[in-house]
Image (cartoon, rainbow, N blue to C red; front, side):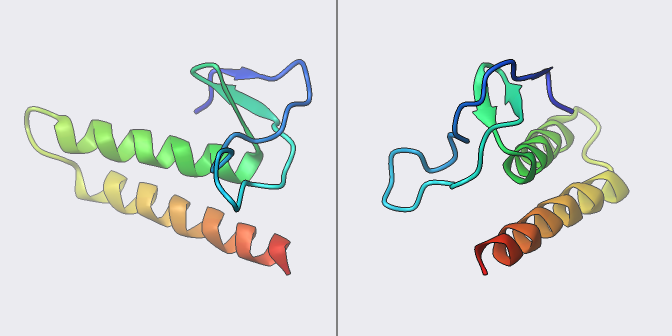
Length: 83
């Protein structure tokens, strides 16, 4: 999943340079970028989708569905936390 837990408490960097940045504190760092838990889960799913679709023998349907479900779950959590 993620490469390292953050030692410092930076803000999540998702949409950081937009009018609607993620308001949560980072809990992990992926490839040097701080993410909150929900955004890290989504990012991991995006990486998994990219790896699955680039495999030489095609992608594995079950793993792709799992990655997409992970994104949907993270988006639901984010929507709940906004309310």
